[in-house]
Length: 432
Image (spheres, rainbow, N blue to C red):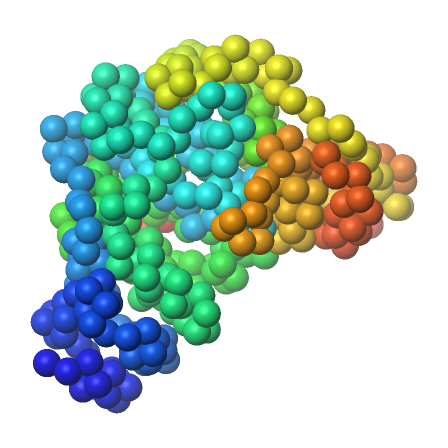
């Protein structure tokens, strides 16, 4: 078999065989296929696509390029993935809800990059919280308390790390089969039997249109099912930030409020829908029954107690969960006000995410450090009526010089109108 022949075959829009895909993945991991040839095949895939069979095989070969966790002893064991967004802290709410309902949650998460936040960064804003657990610690914690949220293991899916690095510098990121296989190969390697997906669309998402998001969601659900996983997806709106807080410790504070029965109704609705989907898949029960279980776990405080249990198990200081006012506050703040009266008709998520990164809450490259207390707290949601001079956002940072640039980004994201915008839901569709 020859990599040049495989490149030529895909260049002419022909489907690759399982043996050819396996040869490619084995070759990049062994270093026998050089980067320039791997990049050529990635570009051919980007331009010519892959069918569902090819994508499922590619995902399986990537997943098995490293260690694959065996979590069968923890059944039902569930995982969740969001395609990223601004203010997206749903995993920190959904996982405790599902765990409180008897589902084992074994989740490996990533760090934030660009305008999207990372679950691991948010958890590390809790003093003492350990996100790096050994495989043995990870398994035993899920077995003991039903939940663990940890950083992605370096031993899992090495093929994805190689391919993602190449895609990032060769203009081949925006390929549906490559996106789907990248996400799902890590989920398959992580070993859960149930996978609930949250596929974002809109201004603050990678998939800009609902049609693109639906296609990606369908591809990932098909991959999951082809590999024997119970898989479903929600397609959700990311034109505006999710919740009222953007930034690491600020989002943890918002999670605590939501698990205590307070907080943003929009965020609560989405979290309950994702939790219900996960519970329904894991328990094999009707969605209505799963939704009732999720709501009861939230309203009773059982989900909040599960969050505290997880924080304690991973070395975090539970006092910060019980008393969120303990979180360090940024040294500098700036409150922005409405320049005129009107209805808040849009608040562009990508600009808000970039502003939070400017303040220090995000990173532009993986080696950047982040300011855990930096970020933005919104005081109004789309649809709210604002009078001139009303506060609509407060910026927080420990680097005073960033405030003006971040303020300009936030103001650029704000759109006011004389008429109230039509109400729109956060959930746009579902793939099962």
